[in-house]
Length: 256
Image (cartoon, rainbow, N blue to C red; front, top):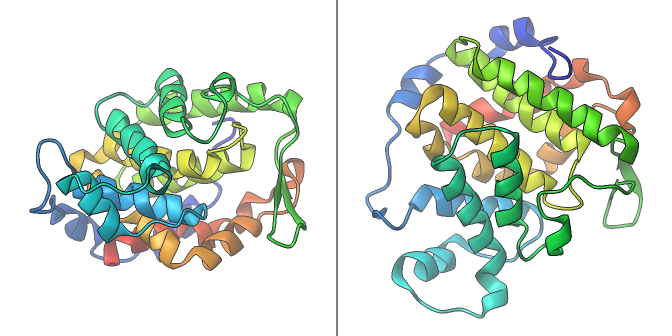
């Protein structure tokens, strides 16, 4: 593995909650879902968007998506785009080309068309609401090489037999490494959370799409950001040995 670390795998096994595989096996779709509407895709799209500051409520979005109740376009369009990206992922293999296509879909009303599905060529800083830099992502000249290594590791993992705990470990690590590279001009968080669940589905099947990880991250979004920050300020000095608190969050999504 070139970039997706297994450094914490033994520690992760030791702290992984008991009974989660059985809990995962009980997951099922919601009764409200239909052939043309997915309740859990709505949940994922709404809460992943809320993490990014979108003011949207799940009840309103379900009324819009399931029952055709109209709201102002600005209220729903970015969530509709993310919903379309999740729907695309559910029906397509996880690979570099399809990840780019998912970003085109989710970025429709976030980025100019020329930036959708394209690696950034500018420096990227993550800042606080107060304007303080809290993270410096991979430098522009690093992005293509880092993403090449990321996709090679992803391909290796997709073709490696993993047990249940290992699937969750690597799904979280894929999410984490991706957002630390920060390859897009925008939509990195939405993409990272989608990739995490996409990987789960490739390894564990359709039930993965019923895991409410995005809701869990939103309900604990301050902890989510704190755990992301633990690794360090700059990409070249990230310390993945400090990632365990972040990796612990995904399994806990099965408990909500």
